[in-house]
Length: 270
Image (cartoon, rainbow, N blue to C red; front, side, top):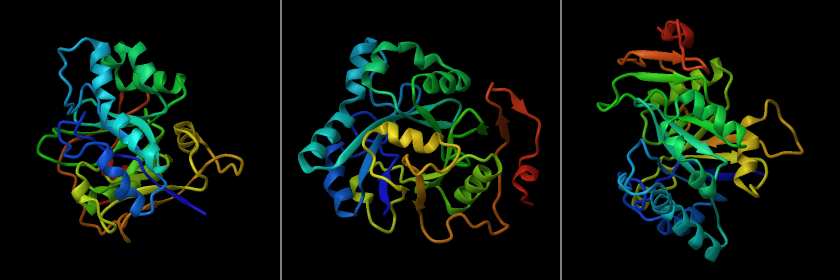
């Protein structure tokens, strides 16, 4: 038996690009057969809707409102809602799971972390990092940064083209990171069975830490929760030979140092 989760979702209370409040997602995801969602609003250095002039504690309380709105509706309907966020560096984005509101209140320095520091500290406190939509090539992105300071790769993202996702999946296989998928949901009116993505686990998540354990596990352990698959359109990860990488690409090691490599040679594409 598998359980389907939305792992990448934004609310209008905290993400500047989102159009729906947290509570509006719950009944629709239930109707589509999801076991739960993880709210991942844009964090401080991304497209946040929260005024950065606020004192830190006030900023965090406002930042968590979308999640808390979804959580309260989830409790009312018997649907699981978990907490995360999406942090941004230089056009590259990372989904952070396993830490909570209290942790944020106690760690204002997190907004100044490098990719390396983020990876080390999130891991130290029991969380994990997923690089979101790593091969996205849009006009607001100057270059592609692929970071090994992560536990997994979001290979399937509804906001990407099929070719971007195929490259991301190939990358995840080359660097031996788990591949996951999320819709990158911003508006409940975009939520349709054929267009929403997700990640399957072989056990129901009792807490966000079950998801963290599943991503960070080096091998299948029947005693723990494991990733059992992804919900993406058929053929989403197929390379067709015409995928183009237009932007410059940097591969960064866990210490944030550039690795000298030709990305096309690494991915074995022409």
